[in-house]
Length: 74
Image (cartoon, rainbow, N blue to C red; front, side, top):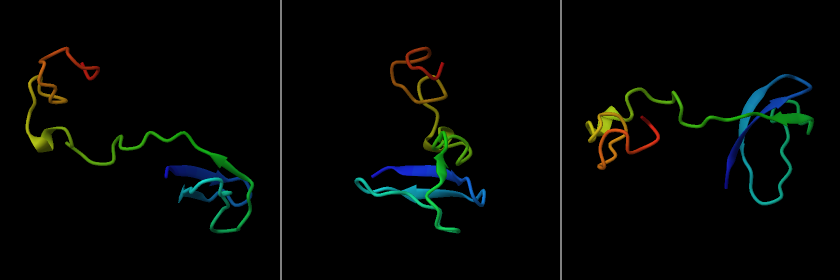
């Protein structure tokens, strides 16, 4: 079940919803269904040093064991 981010066109409230199946999304503040789905870059900037918290990998950034330049992080 995906979590989507929305902005309400009526009250400009920003919110996230867990959508199940064919459920219709509505603003939890004003209850309107006039909402816009937002582009979501989940996980980016959510925590600091997440890659280094598990210890440095082979290339020092993502931990790909194939070494520097092996993944798309480089």
